[in-house]
Length: 120
Image (cartoon, rainbow, N blue to C red; front, side, top):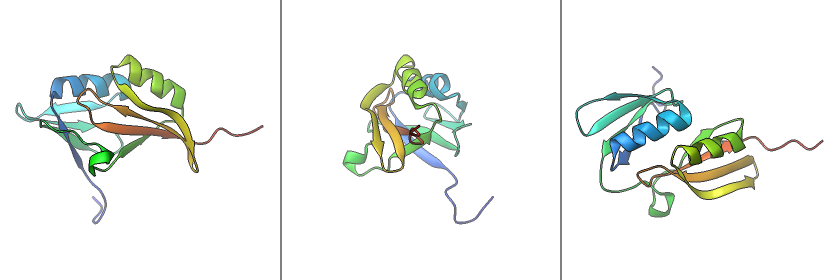
């Protein structure tokens, strides 16, 4: 394990079962429950967990934005929608590529980014 590196992320979730089902279906994450109020996730790029809470994680309220990478951005957006996520910002371009923002079943905001489309 590397010192001084981000090792684990914990996020709120009002409904652990709904969030587990969403992230498993949309992104293929795995989960291990630790009691009724906590579930750890893996297969996500960085390990972390969801703790039961009645608040959400949104950049507008000062929370960090967790950004996932996907080479197939349109497919990721479709999978998020099919899995029950709500698109907060449709795909848009930014200086480093393209991305969209979505809300998970508990109202936490996330983003998915991809490389820019190469001009021919």
